[in-house]
Length: 397
Ligand SMILES: Cc1ncc(COP(=O)(O)O)c(C=O)c1O
Image 1 (cartoon, helix red, strand yellow):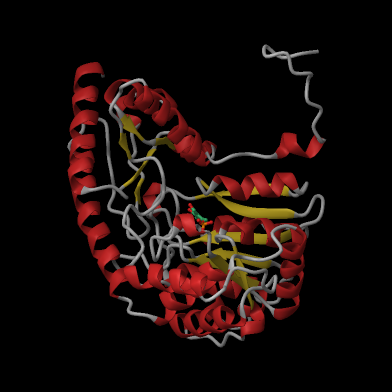
Image 2 (image 1 turned 90 degrees about the vertical axis):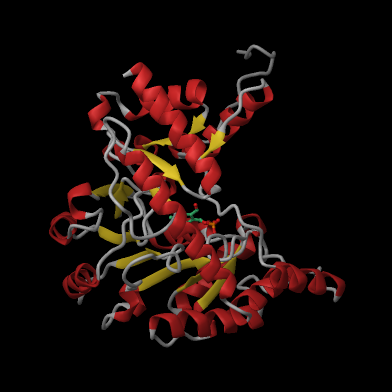
């Protein structure tokens, strides 16, 4: 059998049919195609800070390149960066972290893949948020684990319902994935929620993958990590990195913090896949963590400003209701009042109004009735997008 361009049908391994995707990248590709045909689009689909990386971090990378940091390095990461991460993660969360508990990876994303690969056997159950980052479910399915979604609801400010999570734990539960601040809702788990969860998990043989990649982008309240509660650090893998905090998405630099024996296994997965993370980017990572932190404060304050603009603007649109999120750089307005499904609204917003956003269902079935807008764009562009969405809705619905 051949396809339209005459290629013989590709026979893939069965596991590939279980692999999902991240639609932000697909919407970006479609938006770019429309742009190539002359349509002007405001991009509020992709989750990446639009700021340049701070000059002192770029300088450190350039310096490292000139100094010869152009070779293979240790699979678990350079000792300098593992040390800097151990100190930074430990200090920010008030826990003790040893460099042997740190693995450096190209972006934070591989930590999802590697820890799920390392811990989840066939038919092991993994609890994860829905709506939530789509790669969690994709990876669970890929390794033949059983995905068990738990809901994040608007009426709880998208905080976790501990009773629901506990009700879903069985003898087969191997891993619980938490993500706070949360993509796509901007929700932040409260201290009380995390404390209740930690208490209920005491004595159970369940690991937690705590995706804390947005931990420094919180506008009200504080970041609480489940690792701060008695007995939890040993059973938790923290996922964090440089992409969001330091506007370094394209550098591909992240890390996981986990017990040392698991860290050695994750490093082995690095040996088998990437070999190592690029040395000069790691040296830039040391500069990012040890250097002046005002760049992080500036990014956060600019996001705070944009958050007010977008929330206020969305709440003016008929059929939209947008609560004020406390973290990350996403808003997740409820669009049930428009009487359209999320997809049926996101599509014409892209093709007709020229605003790229994501359907809530890109983050799981329970994202129906919502859209996700990333406010990682200038206030000017956000205002332009709001005007376009409002005009389109008033004209068409
Ligand atoms: C919740 C969440 N976790 C992890 C990541 C991965 O970040 P990176 O691999 O760029 O460090 C992202 C990126 O969008 C994210 O939204």
